Length: 395
Image 1 (cartoon, rainbow, N blue to C red):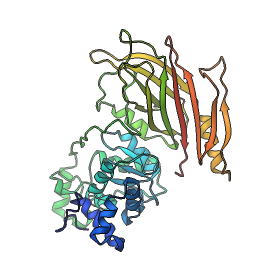
Image 2 (cartoon, rainbow, N blue to C red):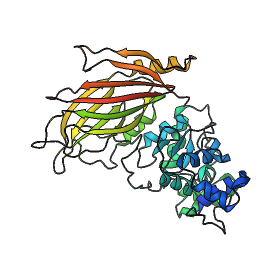
Image 3 (tube, rainbow, N blue to C red):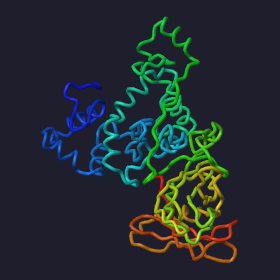
Image 4 (spheres, rainbow, N blue to C red):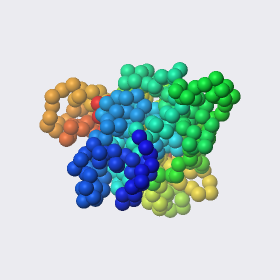
């Protein structure tokens, strides 16, 4: 597939994005007219996403070939399956930011950026150009370890990147191998190009943002250790949990008369955080964040901090949530034929836990959710309200 076209600019869609768009038009004859193209470009982000999902190269995971991928690395523009998305997420948002095609709210700008990157066919042609015979690409039944090794080589170490990026290619494609090329390849084995640096993404609607520093945090940059990345990547996932941090009530004062609170959620080796809300003891975030659920399910840890500019952020309380009952309810629902809304269980408030009221697990519109209102611990005061939704692997 040629990446460059003579007629490349279509309302701001150019380069490899034009390649993706032109290929899609060739597979959808009704879009060949200019009026139909204009209609597609103005049809709204979700409808455009649905069209892109139907494009031939995007019907299968870019990394393992699983059918009907429902996730995207917006950093690279590839459509990926849920298993590969967990590994992309473990690499860190500075390498690969993962979004859901169905669960996230996409903007026109995000879809435009996805179109311009070119789709699975274009990206694989670029990032697998130097894939050698002795390295096998994962298939839908590959182990987690095989996926981790391949995805890290492909996106983090950039070992298979094509030569047009002006980078040394550590491997030579099998169809180009000669005795001299093999010698050159061996001489460059120890070279790994620098990781790509990506601009920070806006806080709004960000899901799955990796944030690995724990308490006493100042630098939120890309300083996560290789050890934590490796450990997160080696874990098998059994599902995903979407956490909507709703609001805080009567939080502790840390800045003379008020605070600048934000929330950190941790599950195993993964951490994500909300935006900071300035000068507010009753902040309303309504911010959704997503975490992968490890096979050995740990408690969901919730930490609240006050953001300080010139000193260490101040602790404002913590809590832990057992998500096992929610996951069990979601699995039971998957095996059932229930369609109507109903209560599936509850976490009973008592003196032995931090709940302000019972945490009801309920089924609504085909989604298993739980609303929790809890008192923050190790702090003088404060209540935090969150909503949990368990996302089965089949989604």
